[in-house]
Image (cartoon, rainbow, N blue to C red; front, side):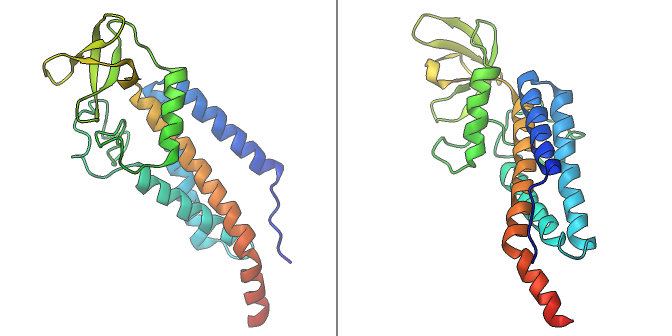
Length: 218
């Protein structure tokens, strides 16, 4: 009977992914983000190759890894450039996908729970609300856009918007740290973990199915 075993190697993979991801989020650097994203793409491409090439009891793991990893990629990374017009950090060499960083969409729109986790990590690891700091601030529509804190009167922040719009007052709850590279890092590590979890689940649920089918065909 096939049994998937969560080995020391799998445990080390999870710890390594978490360490790399949280380190990249905390640093907020472009180099760290590109490294985490490259690792994520490498893993899901490797999983896709394993799903096609590998035979035997290991194949369900690779198929699950590929499906969950690629699904996360297409759910978290948008291909439409019209959804977030203010993303000057985006570079073609970093990704062919445009990435929705802070949701120029409404707060009520559906999104992955990992987005909320990354928001929490940003606020606690990289957020800055000093005068002169670059931030993402909430516009009256509920969307977030890039700007700079011009002043703070103890109740609201005055934000000078990057697109040249008239500066406006924003409540503290509507201010987030400007960390687009950290967000890319966060989704990259969560995507890798989603692929690993999908591979483990597929191996646990469908490993016996493949083994029994092989016995019937022999």
